[in-house]
Length: 84
Length: 491
Image 1 (cartoon, chains in turn brown, green):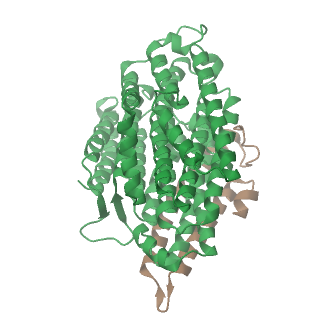
Image 2: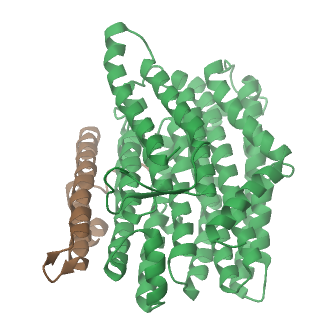
Image 3: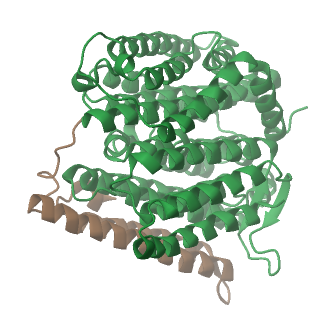
Protein backbone atom coordinates (compact mmCIF):
# COMPACT_ATOMS: atom_id res chain seq x y z
CA UNK A 1 0.00 0.00 0.00
CA UNK A 2 2.85 2.35 0.87
CA UNK A 3 4.42 1.60 -2.46
CA UNK A 4 1.29 2.57 -4.41
CA UNK A 5 0.85 5.76 -2.45
CA UNK A 6 4.41 7.02 -2.55
CA UNK A 7 6.21 5.80 -5.64
CA UNK A 8 6.26 7.75 -8.85
CA UNK A 9 7.71 5.25 -11.23
CA UNK A 10 4.96 3.33 -13.02
CA UNK A 11 6.88 0.07 -12.87
CA UNK A 12 7.20 0.48 -9.12
CA UNK A 13 3.46 1.09 -8.90
CA UNK A 14 2.88 -2.22 -10.64
CA UNK A 15 5.34 -3.83 -8.25
CA UNK A 16 3.33 -2.40 -5.36
CA UNK A 17 0.25 -4.02 -6.83
CA UNK A 18 2.05 -7.34 -6.87
CA UNK A 19 3.15 -6.92 -3.27
CA UNK A 20 -0.47 -6.43 -2.25
CA UNK A 21 -1.43 -9.58 -4.16
CA UNK A 22 1.29 -11.52 -2.40
CA UNK A 23 0.20 -10.24 0.97
CA UNK A 24 -3.36 -11.37 0.31
CA UNK A 25 -2.03 -14.78 -0.73
CA UNK A 26 0.04 -14.97 2.44
CA UNK A 27 -2.98 -14.04 4.47
CA UNK A 28 -4.93 -16.90 2.91
CA UNK A 29 -2.04 -19.26 3.64
CA UNK A 30 -1.80 -18.09 7.22
CA UNK A 31 -5.53 -18.42 7.74
CA UNK A 32 -5.52 -21.90 6.22
CA UNK A 33 -2.68 -23.19 8.36
CA UNK A 34 -3.59 -26.50 9.98
CA UNK A 35 -1.61 -29.00 12.04
CA UNK A 36 -0.57 -31.03 9.03
CA UNK A 37 0.05 -28.39 6.38
CA UNK A 38 -2.16 -25.88 4.66
CA UNK A 39 -5.87 -26.37 4.07
CA UNK A 40 -6.58 -27.42 0.47
CA UNK A 41 -9.17 -24.66 0.10
CA UNK A 42 -6.54 -22.04 0.91
CA UNK A 43 -4.15 -23.60 -1.59
CA UNK A 44 -6.80 -23.34 -4.26
CA UNK A 45 -7.49 -19.70 -3.44
CA UNK A 46 -3.82 -18.86 -3.71
CA UNK A 47 -3.29 -20.73 -6.96
CA UNK A 48 -6.29 -19.08 -8.61
CA UNK A 49 -5.37 -15.68 -7.28
CA UNK A 50 -1.89 -16.04 -8.77
CA UNK A 51 -3.42 -16.83 -12.14
CA UNK A 52 -5.76 -13.85 -11.94
CA UNK A 53 -3.00 -11.50 -10.86
CA UNK A 54 -0.80 -12.68 -13.72
CA UNK A 55 -3.48 -11.53 -16.17
CA UNK A 56 -3.80 -8.18 -14.46
CA UNK A 57 -0.03 -7.78 -14.33
CA UNK A 58 0.35 -8.49 -18.04
CA UNK A 59 -2.25 -5.87 -18.88
CA UNK A 60 -0.72 -3.38 -16.45
CA UNK A 61 2.73 -3.72 -17.99
CA UNK A 62 1.16 -3.38 -21.43
CA UNK A 63 -0.36 -0.06 -20.41
CA UNK A 64 2.95 1.03 -18.89
CA UNK A 65 4.64 0.33 -22.21
CA UNK A 66 1.94 2.32 -24.05
CA UNK A 67 2.25 5.21 -21.65
CA UNK A 68 6.00 5.23 -22.11
CA UNK A 69 5.48 5.43 -25.85
CA UNK A 70 3.04 8.33 -25.51
CA UNK A 71 4.91 10.33 -22.92
CA UNK A 72 8.51 9.20 -23.14
CA UNK A 73 8.68 8.93 -19.37
CA UNK A 74 7.63 6.59 -16.59
CA UNK A 75 7.20 9.36 -14.05
CA UNK A 76 3.61 9.21 -12.76
CA UNK A 77 3.61 12.89 -11.79
CA UNK A 78 4.29 13.86 -15.41
CA UNK A 79 1.65 11.47 -16.76
CA UNK A 80 -1.23 13.38 -15.31
CA UNK A 81 -2.99 15.17 -18.10
CA UNK A 82 -6.29 13.84 -16.76
CA UNK A 83 -7.38 15.99 -13.86
CA UNK A 84 -10.81 16.65 -12.47
CA UNK B 1 -32.47 -23.32 -16.56
CA UNK B 2 -29.35 -22.88 -14.45
CA UNK B 3 -26.88 -19.99 -14.30
CA UNK B 4 -23.90 -22.15 -15.33
CA UNK B 5 -25.41 -22.69 -18.77
CA UNK B 6 -25.98 -18.96 -19.06
CA UNK B 7 -22.32 -18.29 -18.29
CA UNK B 8 -21.27 -21.06 -20.64
CA UNK B 9 -23.27 -19.48 -23.45
CA UNK B 10 -21.64 -16.11 -22.85
CA UNK B 11 -18.13 -17.55 -22.55
CA UNK B 12 -18.50 -19.66 -25.69
CA UNK B 13 -19.84 -16.61 -27.52
CA UNK B 14 -16.58 -14.95 -26.54
CA UNK B 15 -14.60 -17.79 -28.10
CA UNK B 16 -16.80 -17.83 -31.20
CA UNK B 17 -16.22 -14.12 -31.77
CA UNK B 18 -12.45 -14.70 -31.77
CA UNK B 19 -12.84 -17.32 -34.49
CA UNK B 20 -15.22 -15.03 -36.35
CA UNK B 21 -12.52 -12.38 -36.29
CA UNK B 22 -10.28 -14.58 -38.45
CA UNK B 23 -13.16 -15.31 -40.82
CA UNK B 24 -13.91 -11.58 -41.08
CA UNK B 25 -10.46 -10.88 -42.42
CA UNK B 26 -10.60 -13.83 -44.74
CA UNK B 27 -14.00 -13.15 -46.26
CA UNK B 28 -14.11 -9.37 -45.85
CA UNK B 29 -17.37 -9.63 -43.99
CA UNK B 30 -17.70 -6.69 -41.64
CA UNK B 31 -19.23 -6.95 -38.17
CA UNK B 32 -19.60 -10.73 -38.32
CA UNK B 33 -18.14 -11.05 -34.82
CA UNK B 34 -20.36 -8.22 -33.64
CA UNK B 35 -23.49 -9.92 -34.93
CA UNK B 36 -22.44 -13.20 -33.32
CA UNK B 37 -21.76 -11.43 -30.02
CA UNK B 38 -25.19 -9.88 -30.25
CA UNK B 39 -26.82 -13.23 -30.98
CA UNK B 40 -25.07 -14.96 -28.07
CA UNK B 41 -25.93 -12.19 -25.62
CA UNK B 42 -29.50 -12.13 -26.89
CA UNK B 43 -29.77 -15.86 -26.29
CA UNK B 44 -28.41 -15.44 -22.76
CA UNK B 45 -30.82 -12.55 -22.20
CA UNK B 46 -33.81 -14.62 -23.35
CA UNK B 47 -32.76 -17.58 -21.21
CA UNK B 48 -32.17 -15.41 -18.15
CA UNK B 49 -35.95 -15.16 -17.79
CA UNK B 50 -36.04 -18.92 -17.41
CA UNK B 51 -33.58 -19.04 -14.51
CA UNK B 52 -34.92 -20.90 -11.52
CA UNK B 53 -34.10 -19.58 -8.06
CA UNK B 54 -31.80 -21.80 -6.05
CA UNK B 55 -28.14 -22.50 -5.41
CA UNK B 56 -25.93 -24.21 -7.96
CA UNK B 57 -22.36 -25.41 -7.99
CA UNK B 58 -20.29 -24.04 -10.84
CA UNK B 59 -19.35 -27.59 -11.91
CA UNK B 60 -22.35 -29.79 -11.15
CA UNK B 61 -20.68 -33.07 -12.10
CA UNK B 62 -17.66 -32.72 -9.84
CA UNK B 63 -18.57 -30.05 -7.29
CA UNK B 64 -15.81 -27.49 -6.95
CA UNK B 65 -15.14 -26.12 -3.49
CA UNK B 66 -15.88 -22.41 -3.05
CA UNK B 67 -17.61 -22.06 -6.40
CA UNK B 68 -21.27 -21.61 -5.75
CA UNK B 69 -23.84 -19.61 -7.68
CA UNK B 70 -27.17 -18.50 -6.33
CA UNK B 71 -30.16 -17.15 -8.17
CA UNK B 72 -32.80 -15.26 -6.25
CA UNK B 73 -35.63 -13.15 -7.67
CA UNK B 74 -33.69 -9.90 -7.30
CA UNK B 75 -30.46 -11.12 -8.89
CA UNK B 76 -32.46 -12.76 -11.65
CA UNK B 77 -34.12 -9.46 -12.46
CA UNK B 78 -30.84 -7.55 -12.27
CA UNK B 79 -29.11 -10.16 -14.43
CA UNK B 80 -31.73 -9.77 -17.16
CA UNK B 81 -31.46 -6.00 -16.91
CA UNK B 82 -27.66 -6.01 -17.16
CA UNK B 83 -27.75 -8.30 -20.18
CA UNK B 84 -30.29 -5.95 -21.78
CA UNK B 85 -27.91 -3.02 -21.28
CA UNK B 86 -25.12 -5.09 -22.81
CA UNK B 87 -27.33 -5.98 -25.77
CA UNK B 88 -28.08 -2.33 -26.40
CA UNK B 89 -24.37 -1.46 -26.14
CA UNK B 90 -23.32 -4.22 -28.55
CA UNK B 91 -26.00 -3.25 -31.08
CA UNK B 92 -24.97 0.37 -30.79
CA UNK B 93 -21.34 -0.59 -31.43
CA UNK B 94 -22.10 -1.92 -34.92
CA UNK B 95 -22.14 1.62 -36.27
CA UNK B 96 -20.26 3.42 -33.54
CA UNK B 97 -17.20 1.21 -33.78
CA UNK B 98 -17.46 0.60 -37.51
CA UNK B 99 -14.00 1.96 -38.22
CA UNK B 100 -12.27 1.00 -35.00
CA UNK B 101 -14.00 -2.08 -33.68
CA UNK B 102 -12.72 -5.51 -34.54
CA UNK B 103 -13.50 -8.95 -33.20
CA UNK B 104 -11.35 -8.33 -30.10
CA UNK B 105 -13.65 -5.54 -29.07
CA UNK B 106 -16.71 -7.79 -29.15
CA UNK B 107 -14.90 -10.67 -27.46
CA UNK B 108 -13.92 -8.41 -24.58
CA UNK B 109 -17.45 -7.02 -24.31
CA UNK B 110 -19.00 -10.47 -24.12
CA UNK B 111 -16.40 -11.64 -21.61
CA UNK B 112 -17.13 -8.58 -19.53
CA UNK B 113 -20.83 -9.46 -19.62
CA UNK B 114 -20.14 -13.02 -18.50
CA UNK B 115 -17.86 -11.80 -15.70
CA UNK B 116 -20.47 -9.35 -14.45
CA UNK B 117 -23.33 -11.84 -14.62
CA UNK B 118 -21.17 -14.42 -12.84
CA UNK B 119 -20.23 -11.91 -10.15
CA UNK B 120 -23.88 -10.98 -9.73
CA UNK B 121 -24.97 -14.59 -9.23
CA UNK B 122 -22.00 -15.75 -7.16
CA UNK B 123 -22.75 -16.98 -3.68
CA UNK B 124 -19.15 -17.16 -2.60
CA UNK B 125 -16.70 -14.34 -2.01
CA UNK B 126 -13.91 -16.03 -3.92
CA UNK B 127 -16.15 -16.84 -6.89
CA UNK B 128 -17.22 -13.23 -6.82
CA UNK B 129 -13.59 -12.13 -6.92
CA UNK B 130 -12.73 -14.40 -9.86
CA UNK B 131 -15.72 -13.31 -11.96
CA UNK B 132 -15.19 -9.72 -10.96
CA UNK B 133 -11.59 -9.84 -12.13
CA UNK B 134 -12.69 -11.39 -15.42
CA UNK B 135 -15.06 -8.46 -15.90
CA UNK B 136 -12.49 -5.92 -14.72
CA UNK B 137 -9.64 -7.17 -16.90
CA UNK B 138 -11.92 -7.01 -19.95
CA UNK B 139 -13.03 -3.58 -18.74
CA UNK B 140 -9.45 -2.27 -18.47
CA UNK B 141 -8.71 -3.52 -21.96
CA UNK B 142 -11.90 -1.95 -23.32
CA UNK B 143 -11.23 1.42 -21.68
CA UNK B 144 -7.77 1.35 -23.21
CA UNK B 145 -9.12 -0.02 -26.45
CA UNK B 146 -8.19 3.01 -28.50
CA UNK B 147 -4.63 2.73 -27.29
CA UNK B 148 -3.22 4.89 -30.06
CA UNK B 149 -4.50 7.97 -28.24
CA UNK B 150 -2.85 9.06 -25.01
CA UNK B 151 -6.05 9.48 -23.04
CA UNK B 152 -7.43 5.90 -23.02
CA UNK B 153 -4.02 4.49 -22.10
CA UNK B 154 -3.69 6.79 -19.14
CA UNK B 155 -7.29 6.34 -18.02
CA UNK B 156 -7.09 2.57 -18.32
CA UNK B 157 -3.91 2.39 -16.26
CA UNK B 158 -5.49 4.53 -13.57
CA UNK B 159 -8.62 2.37 -13.67
CA UNK B 160 -6.53 -0.79 -13.43
CA UNK B 161 -4.52 0.46 -10.48
CA UNK B 162 -7.52 1.68 -8.47
CA UNK B 163 -9.82 -1.24 -9.15
CA UNK B 164 -7.22 -3.94 -8.62
CA UNK B 165 -6.38 -2.47 -5.25
CA UNK B 166 -10.12 -2.37 -4.49
CA UNK B 167 -10.64 -5.97 -5.53
CA UNK B 168 -7.62 -7.11 -3.54
CA UNK B 169 -8.88 -5.26 -0.47
CA UNK B 170 -12.14 -7.16 -0.83
CA UNK B 171 -10.20 -10.39 -1.19
CA UNK B 172 -8.16 -9.58 1.91
CA UNK B 173 -11.40 -9.17 3.85
CA UNK B 174 -12.51 -12.50 2.40
CA UNK B 175 -9.30 -14.12 3.66
CA UNK B 176 -9.98 -12.79 7.16
CA UNK B 177 -13.52 -14.18 7.04
CA UNK B 178 -12.08 -17.46 5.82
CA UNK B 179 -9.78 -17.45 8.83
CA UNK B 180 -12.72 -17.02 11.19
CA UNK B 181 -15.21 -19.35 9.56
CA UNK B 182 -13.14 -21.68 7.38
CA UNK B 183 -15.24 -20.87 4.31
CA UNK B 184 -16.01 -18.05 1.91
CA UNK B 185 -19.47 -19.32 1.02
CA UNK B 186 -21.99 -16.65 1.92
CA UNK B 187 -24.62 -19.00 3.35
CA UNK B 188 -22.06 -20.92 5.39
CA UNK B 189 -20.51 -17.63 6.54
CA UNK B 190 -23.88 -16.41 7.74
CA UNK B 191 -24.45 -19.41 10.00
CA UNK B 192 -20.83 -19.50 11.19
CA UNK B 193 -20.71 -15.79 11.96
CA UNK B 194 -24.04 -15.79 13.77
CA UNK B 195 -22.54 -18.34 16.17
CA UNK B 196 -19.36 -16.36 16.69
CA UNK B 197 -21.27 -13.14 17.37
CA UNK B 198 -20.11 -9.57 16.91
CA UNK B 199 -16.68 -8.44 17.89
CA UNK B 200 -14.30 -5.61 17.11
CA UNK B 201 -12.56 -7.70 14.48
CA UNK B 202 -15.68 -7.67 12.31
CA UNK B 203 -15.63 -3.89 12.30
CA UNK B 204 -12.27 -4.10 10.54
CA UNK B 205 -13.57 -6.67 8.04
CA UNK B 206 -16.64 -4.54 7.35
CA UNK B 207 -14.48 -1.48 6.86
CA UNK B 208 -12.24 -3.38 4.43
CA UNK B 209 -15.27 -4.56 2.48
CA UNK B 210 -16.75 -1.06 2.30
CA UNK B 211 -13.42 0.35 1.10
CA UNK B 212 -12.78 -2.48 -1.35
CA UNK B 213 -16.22 -2.67 -2.90
CA UNK B 214 -16.55 1.11 -2.58
CA UNK B 215 -13.46 1.59 -4.73
CA UNK B 216 -14.87 -0.58 -7.49
CA UNK B 217 -18.25 1.14 -7.16
CA UNK B 218 -16.59 4.61 -7.25
CA UNK B 219 -17.73 5.88 -3.86
CA UNK B 220 -16.22 9.25 -3.12
CA UNK B 221 -12.83 9.23 -1.63
CA UNK B 222 -12.02 6.24 -3.88
CA UNK B 223 -13.72 7.47 -7.06
CA UNK B 224 -10.81 9.02 -8.96
CA UNK B 225 -10.66 6.36 -11.66
CA UNK B 226 -14.26 6.75 -12.84
CA UNK B 227 -14.29 10.27 -14.31
CA UNK B 228 -11.24 9.33 -16.38
CA UNK B 229 -12.30 5.87 -17.47
CA UNK B 230 -15.83 6.76 -18.63
CA UNK B 231 -14.97 9.53 -21.09
CA UNK B 232 -11.90 7.72 -22.43
CA UNK B 233 -13.81 4.53 -23.25
CA UNK B 234 -15.85 4.20 -26.45
CA UNK B 235 -19.42 5.39 -25.78
CA UNK B 236 -21.10 1.93 -25.70
CA UNK B 237 -18.51 0.87 -23.14
CA UNK B 238 -19.11 4.01 -21.09
CA UNK B 239 -22.77 3.05 -21.09
CA UNK B 240 -21.96 -0.40 -19.77
CA UNK B 241 -19.43 0.89 -17.23
CA UNK B 242 -21.91 3.36 -15.85
CA UNK B 243 -24.99 1.20 -16.10
CA UNK B 244 -23.66 -2.15 -14.95
CA UNK B 245 -20.10 -2.17 -13.61
CA UNK B 246 -20.60 0.17 -10.66
CA UNK B 247 -23.84 -1.59 -9.68
CA UNK B 248 -22.54 -5.12 -9.18
CA UNK B 249 -20.26 -4.25 -6.22
CA UNK B 250 -23.09 -2.22 -4.72
CA UNK B 251 -25.38 -5.23 -4.90
CA UNK B 252 -22.69 -7.40 -3.32
CA UNK B 253 -22.12 -4.82 -0.58
CA UNK B 254 -25.84 -4.75 0.17
CA UNK B 255 -25.96 -8.53 0.38
CA UNK B 256 -22.89 -8.81 2.59
CA UNK B 257 -23.82 -6.06 5.00
CA UNK B 258 -27.50 -6.90 5.31
CA UNK B 259 -27.55 -10.66 5.20
CA UNK B 260 -24.13 -12.03 6.10
CA UNK B 261 -22.05 -9.92 8.47
CA UNK B 262 -22.99 -9.32 12.10
CA UNK B 263 -24.46 -5.87 12.79
CA UNK B 264 -22.21 -3.00 13.73
CA UNK B 265 -23.69 0.27 14.90
CA UNK B 266 -21.14 2.41 13.06
CA UNK B 267 -21.84 0.96 9.64
CA UNK B 268 -25.02 2.90 8.94
CA UNK B 269 -23.26 6.16 9.79
CA UNK B 270 -20.33 5.24 7.57
CA UNK B 271 -22.70 4.45 4.70
CA UNK B 272 -24.70 7.64 5.19
CA UNK B 273 -21.54 9.74 5.39
CA UNK B 274 -19.87 8.16 2.35
CA UNK B 275 -23.11 8.29 0.37
CA UNK B 276 -23.73 11.96 1.17
CA UNK B 277 -20.12 12.78 0.35
CA UNK B 278 -20.38 10.96 -2.98
CA UNK B 279 -23.54 12.75 -3.99
CA UNK B 280 -22.22 16.16 -2.95
CA UNK B 281 -18.83 15.76 -4.63
CA UNK B 282 -20.31 14.06 -7.70
CA UNK B 283 -22.90 16.76 -8.28
CA UNK B 284 -20.58 19.64 -7.49
CA UNK B 285 -17.87 18.35 -9.81
CA UNK B 286 -20.41 17.65 -12.55
CA UNK B 287 -21.38 21.33 -12.54
CA UNK B 288 -17.98 22.55 -13.67
CA UNK B 289 -17.33 20.02 -16.42
CA UNK B 290 -16.75 21.12 -19.99
CA UNK B 291 -16.76 17.58 -21.34
CA UNK B 292 -20.22 16.03 -21.72
CA UNK B 293 -19.14 12.47 -20.98
CA UNK B 294 -17.12 13.54 -17.97
CA UNK B 295 -20.21 15.37 -16.76
CA UNK B 296 -22.22 12.15 -17.03
CA UNK B 297 -19.46 10.24 -15.24
CA UNK B 298 -19.62 12.59 -12.26
CA UNK B 299 -23.38 12.31 -12.16
CA UNK B 300 -22.89 8.52 -11.96
CA UNK B 301 -20.81 9.06 -8.82
CA UNK B 302 -23.65 11.15 -7.40
CA UNK B 303 -26.13 8.38 -8.17
CA UNK B 304 -23.92 5.80 -6.47
CA UNK B 305 -24.02 8.16 -3.50
CA UNK B 306 -27.85 8.12 -3.46
CA UNK B 307 -27.86 4.35 -3.48
CA UNK B 308 -25.33 4.20 -0.66
CA UNK B 309 -27.44 6.60 1.41
CA UNK B 310 -30.42 4.33 0.81
CA UNK B 311 -28.36 1.36 1.91
CA UNK B 312 -27.39 3.21 5.08
CA UNK B 313 -31.04 4.08 5.71
CA UNK B 314 -32.02 0.43 5.27
CA UNK B 315 -29.28 -0.69 7.63
CA UNK B 316 -30.34 1.85 10.23
CA UNK B 317 -34.02 0.99 10.02
CA UNK B 318 -33.28 -2.70 10.30
CA UNK B 319 -31.08 -2.18 13.34
CA UNK B 320 -33.94 -0.24 14.94
CA UNK B 321 -36.32 -3.10 14.22
CA UNK B 322 -38.42 -1.34 11.59
CA UNK B 323 -38.48 -4.10 8.98
CA UNK B 324 -41.06 -2.39 6.78
CA UNK B 325 -39.01 0.79 6.51
CA UNK B 326 -35.89 -1.25 5.77
CA UNK B 327 -37.65 -3.01 2.91
CA UNK B 328 -38.85 0.37 1.59
CA UNK B 329 -35.37 1.85 1.68
CA UNK B 330 -33.73 -1.12 -0.02
CA UNK B 331 -36.49 -1.20 -2.63
CA UNK B 332 -35.70 2.45 -3.25
CA UNK B 333 -32.01 1.59 -3.67
CA UNK B 334 -32.70 -1.05 -6.28
CA UNK B 335 -35.40 0.92 -8.11
CA UNK B 336 -32.90 3.76 -8.29
CA UNK B 337 -30.26 1.30 -9.47
CA UNK B 338 -32.49 0.02 -12.27
CA UNK B 339 -33.52 3.49 -13.38
CA UNK B 340 -30.01 4.81 -13.27
CA UNK B 341 -28.65 1.80 -15.14
CA UNK B 342 -31.15 2.15 -17.97
CA UNK B 343 -31.33 5.90 -18.31
CA UNK B 344 -27.65 6.65 -17.81
CA UNK B 345 -26.63 4.08 -20.39
CA UNK B 346 -29.29 5.49 -22.71
CA UNK B 347 -27.87 8.96 -22.22
CA UNK B 348 -24.31 7.77 -22.81
CA UNK B 349 -25.40 6.13 -26.06
CA UNK B 350 -27.27 9.27 -27.17
CA UNK B 351 -24.30 11.49 -26.39
CA UNK B 352 -22.27 8.89 -28.26
CA UNK B 353 -24.39 9.54 -31.38
CA UNK B 354 -23.64 13.23 -31.14
CA UNK B 355 -19.96 12.70 -30.30
CA UNK B 356 -19.55 10.48 -33.32
CA UNK B 357 -21.14 13.15 -35.52
CA UNK B 358 -19.22 16.14 -34.13
CA UNK B 359 -15.98 14.36 -33.27
CA UNK B 360 -15.74 16.16 -29.95
CA UNK B 361 -17.00 15.62 -26.43
CA UNK B 362 -16.99 19.27 -25.40
CA UNK B 363 -20.30 20.92 -24.57
CA UNK B 364 -19.45 23.85 -26.79
CA UNK B 365 -19.30 21.68 -29.89
CA UNK B 366 -22.19 19.43 -28.86
CA UNK B 367 -24.51 22.39 -28.34
CA UNK B 368 -27.74 22.12 -30.26
CA UNK B 369 -27.41 18.44 -31.05
CA UNK B 370 -30.94 17.80 -29.80
CA UNK B 371 -32.30 20.13 -32.48
CA UNK B 372 -30.14 18.91 -35.35
CA UNK B 373 -30.58 15.25 -34.50
CA UNK B 374 -34.23 15.15 -33.41
CA UNK B 375 -34.51 11.42 -32.69
CA UNK B 376 -31.34 11.39 -30.61
CA UNK B 377 -32.53 14.54 -28.88
CA UNK B 378 -35.92 13.06 -28.01
CA UNK B 379 -34.33 9.91 -26.62
CA UNK B 380 -31.89 11.96 -24.51
CA UNK B 381 -34.81 13.91 -23.15
CA UNK B 382 -36.49 10.70 -21.96
CA UNK B 383 -33.29 9.71 -20.17
CA UNK B 384 -32.84 13.16 -18.65
CA UNK B 385 -36.40 13.27 -17.32
CA UNK B 386 -35.96 9.87 -15.74
CA UNK B 387 -32.58 10.74 -14.23
CA UNK B 388 -33.91 13.98 -12.81
CA UNK B 389 -36.71 11.96 -11.22
CA UNK B 390 -39.50 14.29 -12.27
CA UNK B 391 -42.81 12.46 -11.80
CA UNK B 392 -44.34 10.66 -13.63
CA UNK B 393 -40.89 9.31 -14.65
CA UNK B 394 -40.01 6.11 -12.81
CA UNK B 395 -36.83 7.73 -11.47
CA UNK B 396 -39.04 9.60 -9.00
CA UNK B 397 -40.08 6.44 -7.17
CA UNK B 398 -36.57 5.29 -6.32
CA UNK B 399 -35.70 8.67 -4.90
CA UNK B 400 -38.99 8.90 -3.02
CA UNK B 401 -38.51 5.48 -1.42
CA UNK B 402 -34.93 6.28 -0.35
CA UNK B 403 -36.20 9.52 1.16
CA UNK B 404 -39.00 7.68 2.95
CA UNK B 405 -36.52 5.18 4.34
CA UNK B 406 -34.35 7.97 5.65
CA UNK B 407 -37.15 10.14 6.96
CA UNK B 408 -38.16 7.45 9.40
CA UNK B 409 -37.15 8.51 12.92
CA UNK B 410 -35.44 11.85 12.43
CA UNK B 411 -34.35 12.19 16.06
CA UNK B 412 -30.89 11.30 14.90
CA UNK B 413 -28.96 14.40 13.70
CA UNK B 414 -26.85 12.29 11.31
CA UNK B 415 -29.94 11.05 9.49
CA UNK B 416 -31.35 14.57 9.35
CA UNK B 417 -28.10 15.86 7.86
CA UNK B 418 -28.03 13.04 5.32
CA UNK B 419 -31.65 13.74 4.39
CA UNK B 420 -30.95 17.43 3.90
CA UNK B 421 -27.89 16.64 1.78
CA UNK B 422 -29.88 14.14 -0.27
CA UNK B 423 -32.75 16.51 -1.01
CA UNK B 424 -30.40 19.35 -1.88
CA UNK B 425 -28.59 17.03 -4.26
CA UNK B 426 -31.78 15.84 -5.93
CA UNK B 427 -32.69 19.47 -6.59
CA UNK B 428 -29.20 20.34 -7.80
CA UNK B 429 -29.09 17.32 -10.09
CA UNK B 430 -32.51 18.11 -11.57
CA UNK B 431 -31.21 21.62 -12.18
CA UNK B 432 -28.16 20.57 -14.11
CA UNK B 433 -30.04 17.96 -16.10
CA UNK B 434 -32.35 20.79 -17.13
CA UNK B 435 -29.29 22.85 -18.06
CA UNK B 436 -27.95 19.92 -20.09
CA UNK B 437 -31.27 19.71 -21.94
CA UNK B 438 -31.23 23.47 -22.48
CA UNK B 439 -27.80 23.35 -24.09
CA UNK B 440 -28.68 20.30 -26.14
CA UNK B 441 -31.76 21.98 -27.62
CA UNK B 442 -30.29 25.43 -28.08
CA UNK B 443 -30.65 27.09 -31.45
CA UNK B 444 -26.96 26.90 -32.19
CA UNK B 445 -24.29 24.65 -33.53
CA UNK B 446 -23.64 23.40 -36.99
CA UNK B 447 -25.70 21.09 -39.12
CA UNK B 448 -25.49 17.47 -38.00
CA UNK B 449 -26.79 14.34 -39.61
CA UNK B 450 -29.13 12.09 -37.65
CA UNK B 451 -27.53 8.89 -36.37
CA UNK B 452 -28.19 5.69 -38.34
CA UNK B 453 -31.05 3.42 -37.38
CA UNK B 454 -28.73 0.74 -36.00
CA UNK B 455 -27.67 3.22 -33.34
CA UNK B 456 -31.13 4.59 -32.68
CA UNK B 457 -32.89 1.22 -32.37
CA UNK B 458 -31.08 0.00 -29.22
CA UNK B 459 -31.56 3.43 -27.68
CA UNK B 460 -35.24 3.31 -28.51
CA UNK B 461 -35.47 -0.08 -26.78
CA UNK B 462 -33.95 1.34 -23.59
CA UNK B 463 -36.21 4.38 -23.83
CA UNK B 464 -39.19 2.07 -24.22
CA UNK B 465 -38.23 0.39 -20.96
CA UNK B 466 -38.05 3.78 -19.26
CA UNK B 467 -41.44 4.74 -20.69
CA UNK B 468 -43.05 1.43 -19.72
CA UNK B 469 -41.72 1.63 -16.17
CA UNK B 470 -42.97 5.21 -15.93
CA UNK B 471 -46.46 4.30 -17.12
CA UNK B 472 -46.66 1.23 -14.88
CA UNK B 473 -44.30 2.10 -12.01
CA UNK B 474 -46.07 -0.30 -9.66
CA UNK B 475 -44.88 -3.25 -11.76
CA UNK B 476 -41.24 -2.21 -11.36
CA UNK B 477 -41.51 -1.19 -7.72
CA UNK B 478 -43.50 -4.22 -6.61
CA UNK B 479 -41.26 -6.59 -8.56
CA UNK B 480 -38.19 -5.14 -6.90
CA UNK B 481 -39.92 -5.13 -3.53
CA UNK B 482 -40.68 -8.84 -3.77
CA UNK B 483 -37.01 -9.51 -4.62
CA UNK B 484 -35.83 -7.33 -1.72
CA UNK B 485 -38.15 -9.12 0.70
CA UNK B 486 -36.76 -12.47 -0.41
CA UNK B 487 -33.22 -11.11 0.02
CA UNK B 488 -33.84 -9.75 3.50
CA UNK B 489 -35.89 -12.79 4.46
CA UNK B 490 -38.72 -10.62 5.77
CA UNK B 491 -42.37 -11.57 5.26
